Every structure is written in C-alpha cells, then in structure tokens.
Length: 248
Image (cartoon, rainbow, N blue to C red; front, side):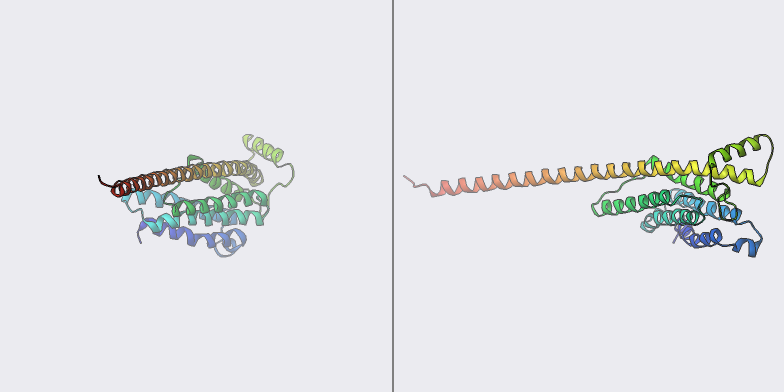
C-alpha cells in the first residue's frame, strides 16, 4: 500500500457514501447541509482523488499492478453510481446512462482481452475529454436538482435561456440558478454520450489494429517455419538420394 493506491481505495469507499447522500436526506437531517451541496462536494472530492493518485504515482515512481487494476474500476464505480442516482431522480435520461455505462464495460472487456494477448491500449485524448465532461455534467445536474427532481421538465432549453437572461439582469434566485445548471448539464450530457461513443470507436480501432498486426506476425512466423521445414526436408531427401546411388 502506498499513497496513490490509498487514494484509489478511498475513492471506492466514497461511492456508497455518495449514493446515500444523493438518494436520501441524511446530509440535511444529520449535518444541516443541502443535499445538492454535500453531494457535489463529495463527488468532486472523489473525482479529485482520480487525478491525485495518478499524479503521485508518476511523481513518486509508485506505479503498481494493484493501482493499474483498481484505478479504472474505481472510476467506473464512481461515474456509474452518480449517473444511476441521477436517473432515479429523472435528472438524466436512462438511455443516455445505459450508453455511457455500456461503453465503460465494453472498453474494460476490450482492455482485458488485450492484456491476455500481451499488449495494452493506452487512454486516448477523447477518453480523457469524456471523463472531464462526465464530471462537469454530473456536477451541473446535481446542482440543478430541486429536492431530488429537475427544476424544469418541459421546455428546458427556453427555461434555461430565460434563467440565463435573468442572471445577466442581476436577478439572482436559486430557481434561476438551478434551471441554468440543469440546462447546461443536459447539454454536457449530450457531449458525454458523443465522446463516449467516439472514444469507444477509437479503442476498438486500436484493438483491431493491434490484433491484425499480431495475426500478420504469427502468419509470417508460421510461413517462415514452414519454409524452413520444407527446406530441411528437401535437403534430407537429397542427402539420402545421394547416399543411395550405386558406386562405380
């Protein structure tokens, strides 16, 4: 155990606490803190550990097999738990969350297969953008909730635009702030869905390229081995024929 792995394990243990805070009134009943504020603080703290564990692992030279395996698991648990909690309160559409979570499982399976084949698939820039967009989208949607429900269900675009105009006019109200965060969060959710699908395509493309190269290398090795055996067999037959010729 080292500091990076401790941070990763801490992120895993924060996941059930985040779910309890988002789905219950425990923060308001016990601590007198708003459910949205406590949930956002807890989620951002857990997301910060994702950056810190990688930073300290590279800075201290403490990249371990345990950390390499646990880090993506912790990320997926955190993001999946947050999105599923948002679906419970109708803050995020279920179809979008299914796409996002299915993408995570698909890429994890792809990396596992790649590991068994002896190569790795590095994280792409689009994958990192997807992670950042997820954090922003979840934060905005939590802030946009109104006691566990969306502030605006119909005409969310126009309501968010009106809320933005009200804020520009220095009419700061909690309802305007929630409507603006909710609208911005839904826009970010579309970005997350697009970046998830595009990054998954990139991972599958890299995987196919790696597998194709491996197959070509194996085929070339088999061909060279077959040619070597044929040459060896031909030499053996020629030697036997020369030994079997009658001497004058």
